[in-house]
Image 1 (cartoon, rainbow, N blue to C red):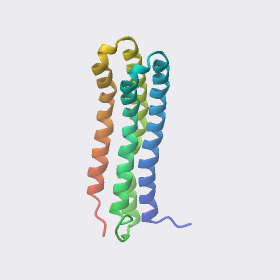
Image 2 (image 1 turned 120 degrees about the vertical axis):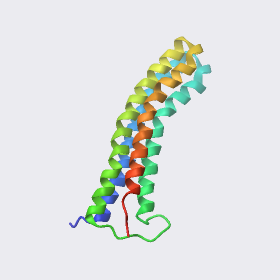
Image 3 (image 1 turned 45 degrees about the vertical axis):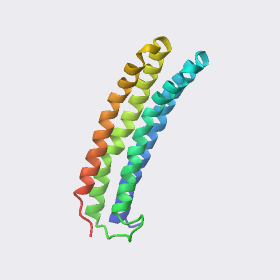
Image 4 (image 1 turned 60 degrees about the vertical axis):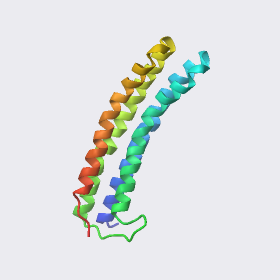
Length: 159
């Protein structure tokens, strides 16, 4: 089997999409478990619970955006494929790692924080604003990793 630059670049795209998606699935699941418990007692809190449950899903979106950006850069979506050297493929792979790794872990952490916030609104619904801010703080690092990945990908020149 021959590993070429394009294959290595595909791996970067796949890791960005896959790991961020896994983290989001776990995070949304954690928050959803807490939300289901609250909603059995008070279905009127559905809107707030839904917002808190959805927050960890954004990391999966960041990974998907990064993966699509790589595919566009490679000319695979609406263009003609470009030649990618092994070195360029490795550069693309490494450029995808910030969003892949940070979003994987931050989505899980955000899911746990969202679950705690869901517990908070179950007891103190007047604190909904604070309950949303706490998991949103975790989002900062996912956004920074997306920015890092985009900036790194922009430095790679393909011909």
